Length: 494
Image (cartoon, rainbow, N blue to C red):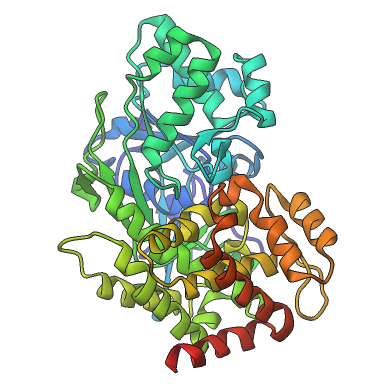
């Protein structure tokens, strides 16, 4: 017999011991609009907001999907309620979250969404739209004026498709109505994400209208660093959650116990008391961003590409292989940590904590999921560290292995000759480069490193970078992932 559906009517009938919202949800009003209402937001920011609504109900969230209505379709019958299931070695621990009041589909409810963003009650618009959602050049952080969505939005400013276009149109409506701007809070894995968002949004606004561009310069764009590992939800996860809570949840979120949120305290229009629910409010987020992007995300990407090629489906399996574990330990210790300036932070302890999180056997985090959109992620996760190391005359061997693993992965054929489903905005271009190169790794390397949106203009002529990456690429090509990682460990010990 099928179970009842999770919603406001059934939440009081859930299994005993399930944590549910401890506030009157009918009294909660929307103070935040979140663009990109995916799993990561619902495992992170939405949980922090849920923790504070009993004290201040004016900060409810309205989420918006910019591309697909999947989240709206899942959560609308549930009145926005969903389960977050925290997994560790002791089991799965579910909790029902109620901070998301509504999910809107920007494709079918665009005007209503823009009107809501333009209303004075909304004081924060936050984003997790992934790197590609910013419509920028990852190597420079500048707005990509050739991006199809940006060109559309400049021609159709009142009917935008992109995140920058949505933000600027909503801000333009507030300006016209004499309403103070909302604060724009990026929660994406971008270096200096607040400044990056400001640069992109201001450039778009100025391109649309010079006066509007000047007004948008006065908008606050605080930077943030968000950290929580959130695997994709599977049907098996849904079945487990249903059995634990006693109701069907179409889209529960699976995650780890660890969570961290560092926020630049810059909210002229007001903000929730995030510091009271575990967030760190600071004046400068950049050191924390670099720490997370380079140590966690850089390691994650290296493990994802080399691990997938080695036949590993999950990150816990990758880090369970001693050779891979030693590679990532050395990557963080020898090549990443020396580039970070974090007085008072024990980076070696953070490294050890990361390795323990990666090894969580209950967290089924797929290498294939992490491998998505590598052309957008590589500059922040690996290439920035490489540039710092090269400028200091230091070795980049482990970092180069990570870059070479990405290059081998985006050939879209694994070591058994099976097709890899490469999900990337540049997938077709990457495949064309691989086809042109044929069986010549150097020609393939030359083709990839000439993509300026990834590698800029400096790395293509850097002999240290070329030699280090090519050596590892040849090894992936000839010997495979396991041998490449194992051989690197042997050479590192000599």
